[in-house]
Length: 218
Image (tube, rainbow, N blue to C red; front, side, top):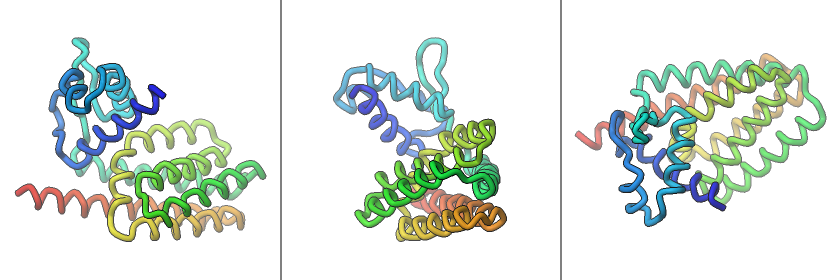
């Protein structure tokens, strides 16, 4: 239960970083955040530790936390790398698919559809995360899987945020279905290309979203 509370506050702080409400270099005070959210400092401390593990904040020796979100250019570069990592995972998954991997990808994709039909972008994000994780695991390459998971975690708030763009849930779900079809068909090139395009679209859409937010604050 404590971990669930910490995750909820982590998500709220992530959103504020991703949308620019909390700026790079800004200090995050445990006591102030606890008072704002109406909770004790424990779940806030745990949330900040989770954010630090993902690179969103930097924990200082004096136990203060500093926002360390990347600038838009850096963020787009990270999406470019993420697209290539996922393409590699998809290509290998199509070649090495095991029955248990197929079952996991199919079940997580079905869960994505339920969240999509409910119009719940946050629920969809978490099912989306499980779907992509299943593809990483299906690659059969532990090192690649670890690297993909690490960068996925680093981009988590931005990937979640872009799912709120109008009609993105339906588009994302359709892309997921096309990706899984290529993997199940044993088509490495199609699986890689569809995953690369899927992530590249996310990056482009987030770039548009960043530009819109910057314009709104002028």
